[in-house]
Length: 153
Image (cartoon, rainbow, N blue to C red; front, side):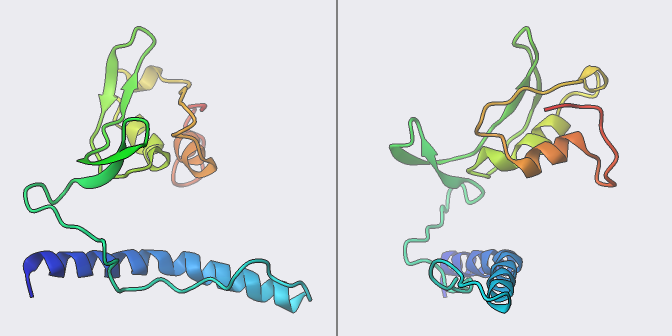
């Protein structure tokens, strides 16, 4: 089997494994609805498949990059996501590169990438709506043990 096909199949298995918890939660929610006499809405969720999508691709020259929406979202490009933390005078104080196509996953890691010289002075973070999610805000405002960080989003 060609190495590219092996990578594509391995990625599909990893993605299916990552989606297992979400699938179990959906099934449990629907079962709880049935137990209380409610009829679950919508079609039954299908379990995640370990079979790769027929359109799955592998980039031989830059395998770490991903296909992402570009520009105004009308086309796709092989790319990286490079969020930056910028202070009021438009000076970059933190930057990082990732392959996450959605910025909602990038808020906490980007705030964590702020230079240690500047980080103690950070009390508030302003973000655009692409970075916002309840989980992302909690990841910035709370430490892993649940204690507040002192930073407000």
